[in-house]
Image 1 (cartoon, rainbow, N blue to C red):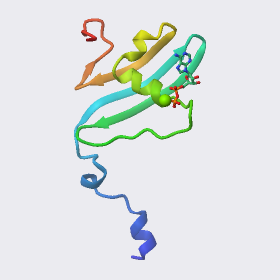
Image 2 (image 1 turned 90 degrees about the vertical axis):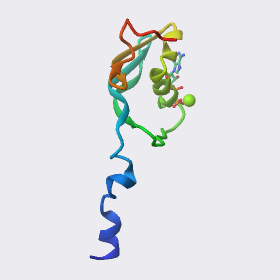
Image 3 (image 1 turned 180 degrees about the horizontal axis):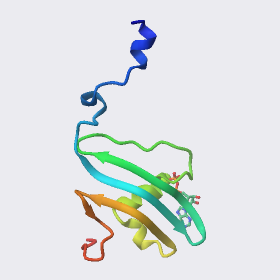
Image 4 (image 1 turned 45 degrees about the vertical axis):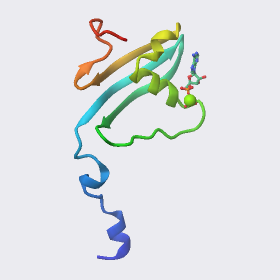
Length: 100
Ligand SMILES: Nc1ncnc2c1ncn2[C@@H]1O[C@H](COP(=O)(O)OP(=O)(O)O)[C@@H](O)[C@H]1O
Ligand SMILES: [Mg+2]
């Protein structure tokens, strides 16, 4: 196998971290500030003991997405979140969840 082919190979899951359990699972997350949509169908797994980074230009929605994970968009009056966000398989937007 040539060097180029070798580099193109997908690294093993122990290297990518995809062998680790999913800690937070987000599916089809949309966020609206009033009429303006800031996130569009974001589906992402965040795995235990792995560093997950969000990279993108200013205003692309990185902070908005992070605020979904700890429900800090709750304190933004005009923000509305849809989709599914689970921590340890529990929906953190379930009304019976204690936000604190
Ligand atoms: N509190 C807010 N009210 C209205 N619009 C907001 C608010 N916070 C962020 N936005 C808008 O949502 C989009 C994503 O912003 P943001 O999540 O801050 O991006 P990033 O963190 O990637 O720079 C931008 O268009 C921004 O203007
Ligand atoms: Mg930001």
